[in-house]
Image (tube, rainbow, N blue to C red; front, side, top):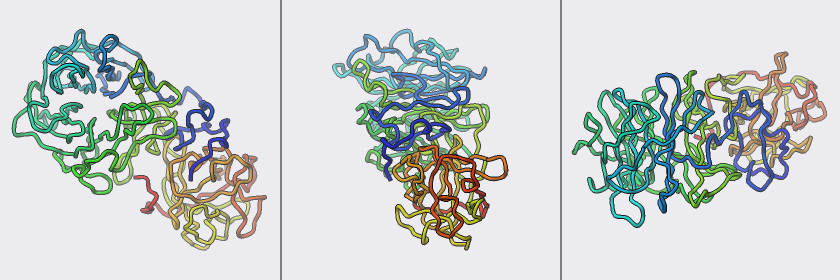
Length: 517
């Protein structure tokens, strides 16, 4: 159910927001500015660097510092183009510009350097980069190699590793290096298939006969990540460079075998996707941040994984000197019990989140609960066990109906989604209205802030349920004690009608239709 921007209470909307900060239409440009109100000492705010730092790659040095490298391409002119800009950070969320990776352009094709991929390998910093001829020049697309003793360069160029003339596939850009059991490999490709090839030991060439395709024509911008017995292939799909009209997003496949096949969460082989945006998005646009994709993964001191990527900010410039203004973002990667990634809590860029290297866990374990009102002793249910969109939420004497059971799931930053087990629909403030006394309803999960809830410990064993969009809490209307009394939102006043017990029923997650992965 879409939210009405004009009704959002911006004094409270970001009060406790972390991962997945904004819903799908909460911060549309032109509807008024949204500013964070949380403590800056514990939260960071996207975008982290701009107005131009697309295709970021990241690696952590032995001294604990993070280094990120990006594109600064202008295919129409090289007058102000940077030769791979470098950022440095001690904490993953505060970044300083260091300089350029190259002192001069690689000479094998005079063109734009883009989509760098950085790793520390065999005692050196190695960078694979894409090089494309300018529109008025001859030459081939390809991937080159450069090395440096230090992360800030300068990097020495070793020339082209693979190019479009080396094979019939084309799309020879966007490399991603992996050391697999001591053997070097390179993933690469751009909308003509994603490929995998073994490299020579010095990384300066590829071995004929080892080339294989692992994903279809829908993708570019590969990132490969190993976790818990699976190899994950993060890929970008859609259009990257059409400003706010761009459709870029991230899709993910995984395999227990490094060489594939890589299948997505639906079980579909990634080889079968040949149309943009045809698969299941694991990171996509919301109302403020557009076209998030083409990134990399790193891990902080607490073992928390983070995805760095680029996106547009509708409150910022769409273009800078004619170049799309794709800025630098970071969001945490959570993992489901069956080992699928969930980026930024609701799979859209967050405006703000809890800083890296800090612990962020919910006060309630994920599971199925009866939610019991302290004043009346009755439990929250969907009226008449309805499965309809917009059905009313009320209180009733507990009777073991699945309409009285709720899947409570932590999505980060202090926020939860609360989904009815019977209907597979989420607890919702309709249209994100800030009206005191507005009845709560159920609607399919759409990642909006009106469906996100802060569950707050009252200090007496009870909890209040605060809506992220409105700042109001769930209560039984007029402190009623009768079956059928409405559950509404109201400003917190400490009354028992606003206090709830969460009675744990079980920990098995229902496979509800609205599940976002």
